[in-house]
Structure formats: structure tokens, C-alpha cells
Length: 200
Image (tube, rainbow, N blue to C red; front, side, top):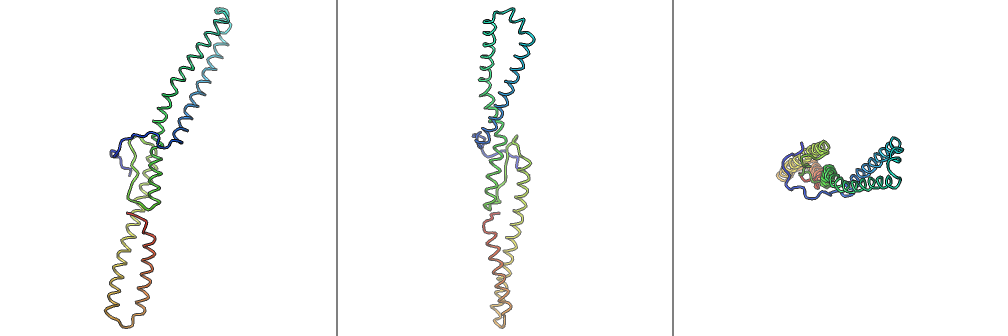
């Protein structure tokens, strides 16, 4: 299971996967601008269809254009004000995805290098907890397998030592025993080679 205790270090760096997070924020900003453009077009189109003629009768053309320009400037200023706020919120929210991805990638790198001693620890509110949980289960399974193999190898070494003592104490015809010992030694070397990089 995922460890849910307090992490050792507080989150101080929010751009842990810069490319992913900036792309995420870019998509949010693009959607915001597209939504604003569509809403503005609908408002303008509706106002001009329903009230254009009446407004033209009430205001001179120059005054009407000045009002439209003022509205445009205020909308632009609102977007310029909202953009940094949305950017900060986007980076904060994206960190709840990018942070776990960064931790999972780092953990998988350690795992592929043979280090099975660590676990993926996510903070409260982080995404991808189910994936991290499954990876931790996989890691526990591998750890148990390699621990068992190392234990078997240690027993094999002990049995081989006893066999060698028996051969040394009775130096009569033991050619078959010698062959078996050689096979044991070769098997142990193979196991040692396969298991050498794993730390459990």
C-alpha cells in the first residue's frame, strides 16, 4: 500500500516537470482565451442584432465606437489580469500530477538499477495514487522473490560446504561427488550473477 504518512520534506519546487506542466498551463490558457473570444463574439453579436439599431439612434456613431472600444479595453485588461492568476493555479494543480509522475519515474529508475528497498510515497491530494499503489505491490512481490532466491542460494552454499567436507574426510572414489560439486558451484555462480545487482 502507499505510505500516507507525512513526507520528510515539504514541497518547495512546483516546476518538477517543466515541459509537462507548462504544456498543461498552456492548454488551460488557450481554453480560457478561446472561451473568452467565443463569449465576447456571442455578446457582441447578440447586442448588435437586438440593440444595434436602437443604440445607433441614441448615441452618435463616434460615441458608440468609443463605448465599444472601452468595453474591448476592459475585457483585454481583465484577461491580462486573469492570465497570471490562471497560470499560478495551473502550475499548482499540474504539480499534483507532475510531482507523482516525477516520483514514479525516479522510483522506476531505481528499480531497474536493482534497488528494491524504496517505495513510492505520495503526498495527500496527489493524483496517480492507484498507479503508485500497484507499482509498490509489484515492488513488494519482486522483493519477496529475490529475498527468497538469496535465501535459497545461501542454503545451497551451506549444503555445498557440507558436501565438500564429506569429500575431504573420505578421499576414496568420489568422482561423481566432484561432478556434483562442480555443478553446484556453476549454479551458484549463475545465481550470484543474476542477483548481484538487486538490493533487498
